[in-house]
Image (cartoon, rainbow, N blue to C red):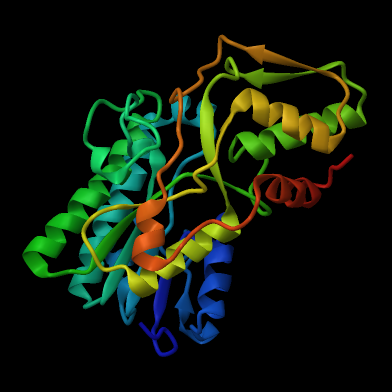
Length: 307
């Protein structure tokens, strides 16, 4: 698909992923004047009329807006997280269909996989069991966008695709946006203030698959260009690391000399998470290219810390 003449709506343009997505679109030929990324102050995507305004005139939509955050946010605001994520996606996809949008890309989450799914996570196992409870309000809201996309394709012939995105990291993510920036900033401040220890939530045994944000944006744009099927697609690095190993690596790269204390009273979340990335490579030629340690160094530099 040639994107040069296409008008693209990007939701969540002011968030962590959004600016990288817009740069990716520019790199693939979309004219800057044809990218529309409204802020929440401009349009509230929980409201149908605002969704219609957002989708009007768009040829394509990348729905990257989401309400999410660290474990404490998911513990304290599950109702808001469920409602906001569900309503944004449902109302926007319906508005896009009504406005004649050609293609709609929904950004889902690797948390949509069952707690006990076989590893690495394969798209065919998405419905194989119960979900991790803490993130279920967010996860189910996102998973319903896959159901909606497939239903709209079947009934209306609407070209909607669903991507399962693993944990992102990289420049631009705020301190409490995920485990990586939180660990970087906590250790950086501990180093600066000569603190003897840093507390890490959980046992450290949980594992995750992290993808550098520029890689994630490239994968999403390639799916916009070249993927037009109903089956969901994983976007990840395929690299698994435990939170303990992650903390030790960040400690080394930041140059923090104190101790790490793992607080087992805090939840680990899903025990293990690593994605099978074969479908993305086969279908639209995407494979993450930024090495994990290189990505961490860039992220640490962004936050102003280093050894």
